[in-house]
Length: 288
Image (cartoon, helix red, strand yellow):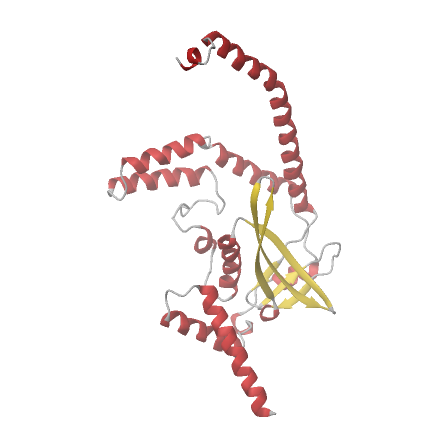
């Protein structure tokens, strides 16, 4: 009807649409192949890093971190409490709109030079979560992988620690259990299945398992002998203890969080840090 009002017949509309389709499908396939090749090259580059890069290690028994700078084979051992950590967010405007980038990093000063490790994160919350996982492990609050990466019980007792097809099956079983317990209804179930159908069902999980097997087959770069020795466990009586200053600051953080439970953790740390600086200035003035 609308085509007739505009003076076009249905056949004219069909010819225009089909002509556009046949004119665009060749460039579209070319762009898809080009984008796939770029993604594959990036994926292959990052996989090859497993054979070239030695990852940063944290030893909570020694309360130290071990870094191997790029282009060097000599590890650097840094006291845990001398490590700096930060979260950054950058925002800019392009022709496509506003773009935000977030990242997390940590570093230290070594022989007059600043050494740092930085990586991108999906958001500020993810960046803070990365650091909290490290900090929680080093401060003996987190003892295994389940405390870090299994908040919704998607790992069975005999499942491997990584995600995979077993994760999907556990999630589906948990969904059905919640339905039986009347925690969720048919709307939740419908959209759960719709989402996983749109994301190709278990194909992403199979790809994750394939990628993990490939990493195991490729192998990782061998650790230096001194780093392997440093990674060996120590008897409990030789474990390093946190400093009195850290214990005092941690107690202040917990006390302020208990008094102001709605205060964000970043504001809690900021207030404790500001109070510490003020008290340090007073002590310095008193000594003078």
